[in-house]
Amino acid sequence: MKTLFDLTYVNPASFSGIAVYALRLLRGIDQLNSGLSPVLLVTQKNCDYFADKFPSFSAIRLQIKEGRIFEKLHAINGYIYKRDLNRIIADNGIDVLFTPYLHMGALFSTDIPQVGVLHDTQSFDLLKGQWVKRCVYRVFTQAAIKRMSHVVVISEHSKISAVKMVPLLNSMPVTTIYNSVEVSSPLGSSLFSKLSPYILVVNTLMPYKNLETLLRAFAILKSRITHNLVIKAAKLVYWEATMVPLIEKLEITDRVYLIPENFSESRLASLYSEAAIFVSPSKMEGFGYSPIEAAIHEIPVVCSKEGALYETTRGLLNYYSPVDDAEQLAGKIENILLKKTCTEKLRKISREYMDVYSPIKQAQELRAVLEKTIKKTS
Image (cartoon, rainbow, N blue to C red):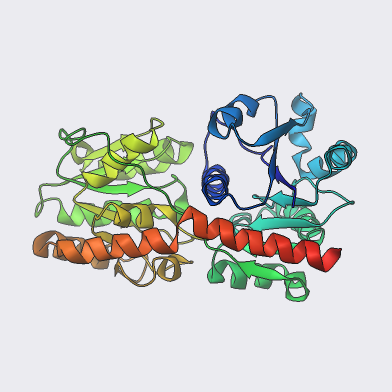
């Protein structure tokens, strides 16, 4: 089963959750020796990166058209590269096309079956009020989904949301395969001793990630605890425009630290493992990597029950609600810091997550879907 993995969307200089998804899945396939015979579809910009990461996999470079006009036409990427992609498929005897990131500009083929991963439908909500952009997004996303032979979603919550937003999924084969989660060993102890003790959050600086509620909760606690608040995230416009003024207003400037630099997996592991507690107050998640990663490092975690979080964390963590209630969140954080969670309980949660979300298990489930899809369309 020769499988073409579309990795043309991955930019090594600016990593994202959907890029992490592909990397972890490929590592699982590599460990499994799964019979998928992956062929990596790469670009000039990321070919060296994937050659270094996966030297045993063959790769084919798609010549991406450069220039501003093509950047603006990303919604029709599939049409722009259709002929080139069909030629690559024919020349290399590809059996199935796998798209780890199914979106409106995803590449597609008219010659072989295709399986795509729909991570979430958040853009339908985030584009409310932007009617033209939302209409374009809806039309092209639905078209991309319709071309799939099989759709993979990353949680049952994502499946329900996707079917609600894109009703045509009701008549298509859809399978839930949870993301895999990997964590590296810490580089060493006390790398972040100058910040300790600290409460940690690792997330994108976007309004729906709900950092505001955490900041307000921290302000409530500031005179009762000695901890700092550490935020690991890229510095976006939202930080300077909205969060910094709020931090100043709450008078917590000297206790809040933003770490915008890119970290290696081992350095991030150190940041997790040295935290006193991890908090994820997000309002929307299709899966939610960071609370699971923190828990694997045997750190107490508090998170909301919004989106897929309660499902994917398997109800094993500490939860608060309503999601915007800073008093509730502050109370939960303080209670955990005071009582100190049993080490054996944290270790048990860690082991369960490592088992349930192992890359090999994800690779096995994907192989089953790809085999079923080829058999059904042959």
